[in-house]
Image (cartoon, rainbow, N blue to C red; front, side, top):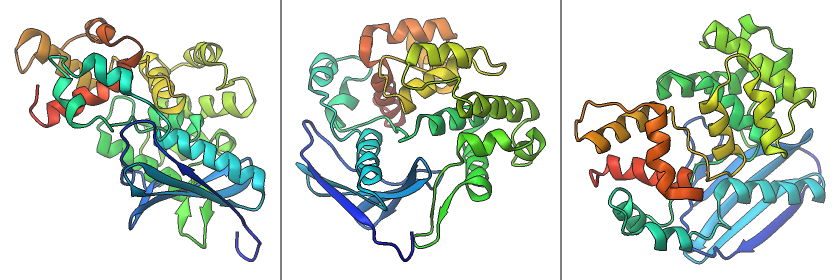
Length: 292
């Protein structure tokens, strides 16, 4: 981006409901700089630097800089999606502020959002990396992938996640060298190839999920993480998540060591209808604060 005239697009967003600009992300893609949050993303091959600042509770300034106005506008759209700044959760809060499990978290933290990704492939790739391992170890793998295979903007020091095309071209052994299990490295490469070839269309949710589920190593949890974090589908809950298995097991039985199965987790979250995914985030917070 150096030495080029950049086009800047800024939008004043007045959130329709309680909103609080969050900090950075563990993988280093979302970064907090003072009062602003920013990251590098790409629209096609064009790098776009996006950022947001919240000078007042009722105002968020979202901006993007790119070589073309089309890329900057698209960058702003994706960044607004990732931040969740346009979401109105009033109905959700009214319905569940008295809920016995998440009610206090809903009342105390109405601004809570699901961490979303501006690119659905990023959400899919990270879900594969996070399958059945400790989150800290998964984050370390993601950071290695970003450092080795991601795209970098030298002027800002920011990096973007690897593209589907880049991961599809890597040998499984190279991906495994970042500490991915061998079968998981193969799954990541196959998923990247399906996306890079156009066989997976993230805009067609149902068809996308069916195609991905046909890839060995991709199950319900991975697709549900994509739906929730990459496609904005709050009606999905990653029911096989170990945290939910433990939480629901304890809440249902009263035994702190009990663990539910996947079907029991799905049954537990049925009460939250189209807000299952958001309710899951509030349940995590409620448990972390000892409110449930």
